[in-house]
Structure formats: structure tokens, C-alpha cells
Length: 236
Image (cartoon, rainbow, N blue to C red):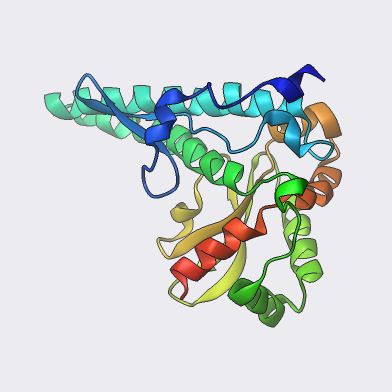
């Protein structure tokens, strides 16, 4: 399949300077204005097959995520201009596109890190302190996965289902957010360990309208090492 040979490494040269917000968001300065860029992936588009097709990955990353980045930057530029002019109505009006497109950028930047090819450990269960937390709170990893899948399948319309760490309570929780609302919108203490995109663009070309099949198969390429690293950093 031609898409297997498509490299993602040349798509976002500027993203090598990534690191915005600590989530691997590309952030660079152009003509004195800081802008966000599409983050690079650590794997090629076809490497998550057969669970997520290379065609979906390429469209999802190059088209959908890039659109969020582009529109986020436009909204921030307009906000900068409105702030300079002190134009309150425009400042208020821009909050919606900033939240939607900025949330889309944040969410997808986490999502790509939540995935990894099988040959690089995709689907291997968590270890260490995260594994113990999962067992203590949910009884088993299978039980957690089942609960996440139920929540993700039941979410009406478009959105995300998350395995979150509540830093204040030092507990795991399963959360959902609508549209492109980032997890932080539910509370500043929430840290995303895993986020699964349940917008149709994430699966429709391969799974049609059968979201539960997509949710069942995505666990084969979930990067539990990333989730474990975040957990240990945020909940030592």
C-alpha cells in the first residue's frame, strides 16, 4: 500500500521545535508572533495497520489536525489584534474558535502519543505504578478497557473519551468531553493519560458507523508506556 511508504517526518519541519504547553505542541516564532505547528509523529502512517489504516492516519494528521492548527493560529492572531485595539466584542467572540481549534490541537497532540505500532510495544499492558492503580481502582485492565469502551460508544455526536489522572485526588477516572473540548476544561487537576478520538473522521473510512469495533481494536496499538510515564511524573 502506497501510504505505508509515506513518511510523516517531512510534513512539519517546524514541529521539531515542539514543546508548547508541555504536551508536545509545536510552538515557534514567525515575524515576532508565536504560532503553533503540526507536531510530527514518531511512526509512519501505515504502521498502525490493520487496526487503524494508513489512509485514515494520513487524512487525520495532515488534514484534520492541520486545520485545527491553522484556525487556532488565525484566531490567536485576531485576538492579538483585538486586544491591541481594546475591542471587547471581538475578544469575546473569539473565545469559541480558540477553545474549539485550540482544544483540537491539544487533544490530537496527545492522541498521536497515545498510539504506537505493535512492533514498538503497542497494546502491551501498563507496568509499575499505573498498573497497580488500574488494578486497585478497576479490578483489572480488561475491566478498565470495557468501561472506557462503553463510555466512548455511548457518547452522542462527536468527542473524546479519556483515562485521566485527577492530581488532587490522586485517582484515575474515565471522562468524556464533547466536540474538541480538552480535558482541562473539566478541571485543572485533570491530566490526560490516554485520549481516544471518537469523532467519525477518526474511524469512518475503515469502520463505517460501527464505533464499538474501532474502540475494541484501537487498544491493540495503545501506547501504555507513554501513559505510564505521564502517570509516574504527575503522581510520584
